[in-house]
Length: 183
Image (cartoon, rainbow, N blue to C red; front, side, top):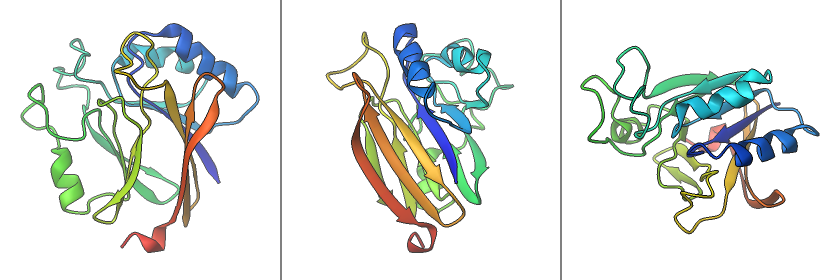
């Protein structure tokens, strides 16, 4: 079973990122996924050795308009196809050739849809896809929501998603699904 940490909307809150890294001192994660805002915030866990995949957020004005950096992308995790995006919908800052998130959900083009942007945690199934928003890790940009992140425990048949809330952290939401139940 692989363990993946999913972060989003850190908005340069280095203290919150360091709190997450302290949480990881007693746990093993195989990879960290950062869903943007801010792209450079992901350098912190990468510099201490965590394997990292990231996409920029819409406030990442040095990266989001750069055609050499993918704003959205597909990856594979333990045989599950995952889509990474900052926004759950198309955005006015999108580049002309960016993948439209709506079409990914509408066409059932992925098993897992990871997104941020709203700062609101979410785990739900939609059109055969598990949609996950880990929330945010920014005290200054909290929009009335607590600081949160997601942990995915995943193997070829099972996905366990937990949303953790700071301070603590303590488990806030937990959902499980089998890949065979999605289609």
